[in-house]
Amino acid sequence: MNWGIFEGLLSGVNKYSTAFGRIWLSLVFIFRVLVYLVTAERVWSDDHKDFDCNTRQPGCSNVCFDAFFPVSHVRLWALQLILVTCPSLLVVMHVAYRELQEKRHREAYGEDGGRLYLNPGKKRGGLWWTYVCSLVFKASVDIAFLYVFHSLYPKYILPPVVKCHADPCPNTVDCFISKPSEKNIFTLFMVATTAICILLNLMELIYLVSKRCHECLAARKARATCTGHHPHGATSPCKQDDLLLGDLIFLASDSHPPLLPDRPRDQVKKTIL
Image (cartoon, rainbow, N blue to C red; front, side, top):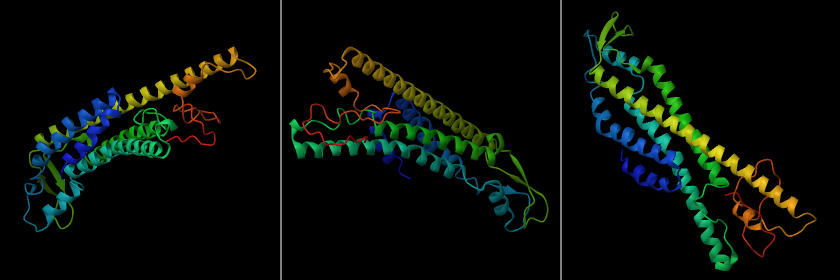
C-alpha cells in the first residue's frame, strides 16, 4: 500500500488544525505510519510460516494459527490507520468546497458583491462541526481498535507457547509463535502511540468546545451591551462586531447573523457551510 498518498493529502490539514492537531498528525506519521511501514510489516511477515506445532497431523498448524490469529496485527493496523486518517480528508474537502463556493460567488457578483466567507479555512459554522465530528470519530476508532486488540490478545501480550486442541489435531498440542518478544514490543509501542493520539484528540475537542462557548458568551454579552446602550431601534455601532461574528455558531438561537458584510441584497439566506 502506498501510504505516501495519504501523507500528501493530510499535509494540507496542518493549515486548518490547532496545535493539538498538528502534534497528532506528526505523531501519526512518525510513530505509527513509519513504524508500521519500516518494521511492523517485516516483524509479522513470517508469523504463519514460522508458527510451529509439535504434531505432524496435516492441517493442524493452519487451524491452530487461525484460532489464535483470527486477524493479522498488520491488517488490523492498516485498517485502523485508514479509518483514523480519513476524517481529516473530510476537513480538507469541506474547505475546498467553501473555496469553490466563494469563487463562484465572485464570478457571479464580482468583487463588489461581498464575500460568503471572510476566511474559508476558519473553523466556523459547518466547518467547525465537521472538524469536531472528525475528532470524535478518530478517537472512537482508536478506542474501538484498542478494545478489539485487547479482546483478541489479553493485555496485548503474545505468549511464546499456545495450547491448541482444535480439529483435526489428535490431542492438545503446543504451538510456538515466532519472535514473541519482538512482536510484543511493537504491539505495546503501537498501543501506547494510539493512547497518546486519543488523548490529543480529546484535548483538542475540549479546547475547541470551550473556546466556542467562550466566544458565544462574549458575543451575547456584546449584543446585550449594545442593545442596552441603543434602545428603541437606534443604530448600533456594534455592526462590525456582528459581522465578525457572522460565522459563529449561535446555540439556542432562531435568528441568523447577516451572510455578507454591507451586501445590498436582503433576500439571501445564510448558509452554515
